[in-house]
Length: 233
Image 1 (spheres, rainbow, N blue to C red):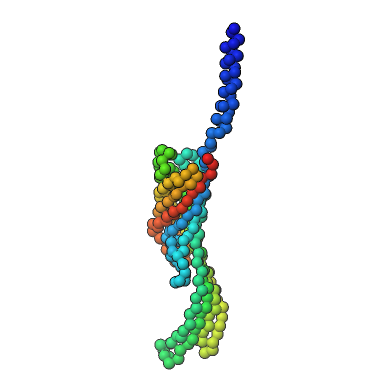
Image 2 (image 1 turned 180 degrees about the vertical axis):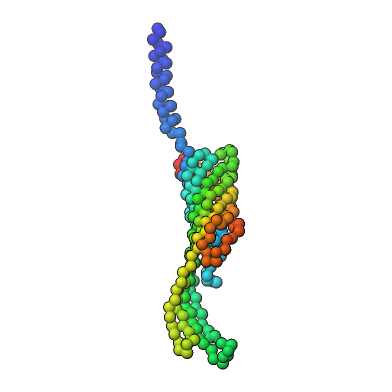
C-alpha cells in the first residue's frame, strides 16, 4: 500500500516534465539587435540644402542605423548618414579692363561640380522610461560623430586674355573632417512587435576641424526621423 502514493507521485512528476521543458524552450529571448532607416538633417547635411543646381529636386539625406542592446536599458548604436549633389553649369561673357574699357576679353566656362557629405556616429542610448510596456519610450543619447565633406569640380575654360583664344582643362578638390561631441534625446513609439517609429535630436560641439578656413563652429543641431526594426520575438 505504501508503494501506491510513490507510484502516483512519480506519474505526476513524469507528466509535468515535458510541460516544463516546453515552457522553458518557448520562452522568447529579449531582442538584442535592431536596424533603422530614416531622414537625417544637420548643420553639415541640410535637409533640401547645399544643392548646386537651382532646378534640382529637394534632397533628403538618408541615415542607416544599427544597434545592439547591451542591457535592458542600455544600447550602443552606429549611424551612417549620406547626401550628395552634382550639377553641370556653363558661363560665357566678356570682361572689360577699367584701364582699357574699349577692349574686352572673352571667357567661357563649362564644368561639372560635385558635393559629397557623410556622417558617422557612435552613440550610447540609455532608456529613461522605466516601464518597458509603454508604447512611448524616451532615451538619453551620448557619443561622438565624425563629419566628412568633399567637393570636386572639373571642366574647361577659355579666355582671350593673352590676345588669342586659349582653351584649357582644369580641376580641383576640397575636403574637410570634423570630430563632434554629441549629446541629445531620442523618442521611440512602438508600432508593433518588431517596428518602432523613432525621432532623435542632438546637439554637437566640434572638437577638431580640418576645414580650409580652420574655423570652429559653435553648437550645431542634428535630427533624424525614421523607422526601426527589432530582430527576435
